[in-house]
Image (tube, rainbow, N blue to C red; front, side):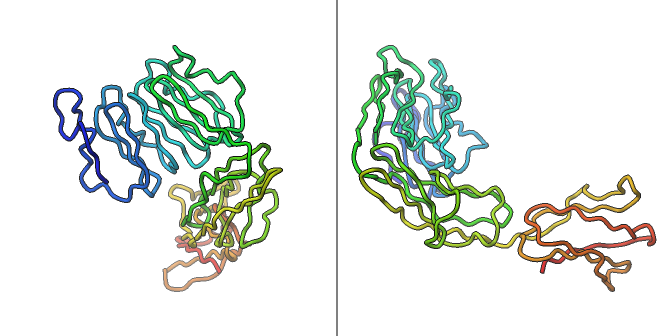
Length: 322
């Protein structure tokens, strides 16, 4: 990426290195500029920041991930996550990093000199921070907004009372079985909007929100996803996104083995893919193995018990998924 203007070096104001792009920065898909700092969003959902750090505006939170969009205020920074929530950091003199309680379903964000604005999927706005000129006052009940932008001390809103329009389509993802995953769309249009997710062109039951989430992604979830959004005026279909699910590798949980209250030996395993039956094998010499327990397919964590462990001076275990 390229940065121009003030800040190619660190010197007297207004030069705070905001135009000195970090060496090796790549795979950038979006950028945002604050008063004297810069933000970059990478394709893996991570954020990089540089420039003036008087209030921690370039201290990207360590936990921040799955970011879809970024915005820079005067001395604060904002990130929109894939679950529709917002994270803010940096200057909080006027409460610009205090996200309103319960704020969710956000589809875009913008930062002013010391206030922040978020556009929600229902076409309404949320705002917080400095409001000396009413820039953080959204009590007027405006709806059907399709885009917004914050100036230093004012806001702009573009209304949409027409057909469905996509702001964001779902993205391809690759995960391991048993791990969480999610896809989302951002669409605007005359309210109300209805959503229907499809898997390989077939409607998914109860998948009628802007976000489609799996808490434990099964192998069978691999395939193509898209979302159909409708209002009274039109119906629009998102582009397809491919979810690739790799089979996870089962492993024994460290510290998860021991003798239970009945004198039986218990084992705990994680990373099961749910693909086939789980077979626990045991050996006393690491050469000869016998099946001691078979369990139905499990996705995630499994606890097994060997009630015959006490008959052997030593016993080794391994697990096989069919």
